[in-house]
Length: 115
Image 1 (cartoon, rainbow, N blue to C red):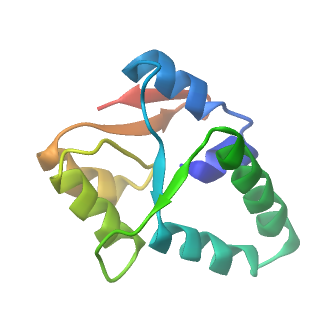
Image 2: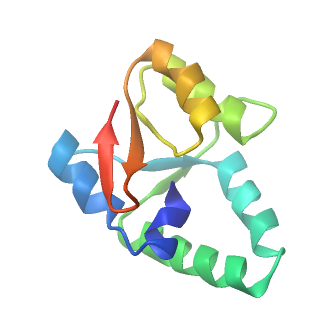
Image 3: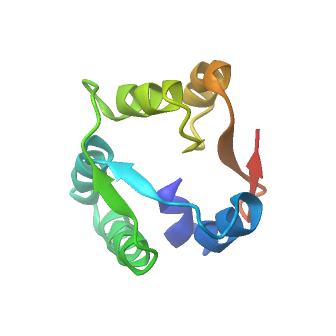
């Protein structure tokens, strides 16, 4: 989801605040940041998008958290099990975490939706 910020120039943060309330807190698991770092080494386009996304995350006070899980998706699944709303465009992950509650996804590359 965080790459949507750079790829589609979509302000997911202000949309999330409108959808969930202004006191919403944004977090990203350390494993997801590691995954972004690996992606950034796979080409200049990825590197530029990820750098922009990280800059926007910083401006929106996204906090890095340590979450259990052997990979990024497992971390998000465990957070969803704790009742945290997960923002993802990964259909398989959305299906897995739907049993725990709501999740946010990008609709038509422009708008976020709560599922």
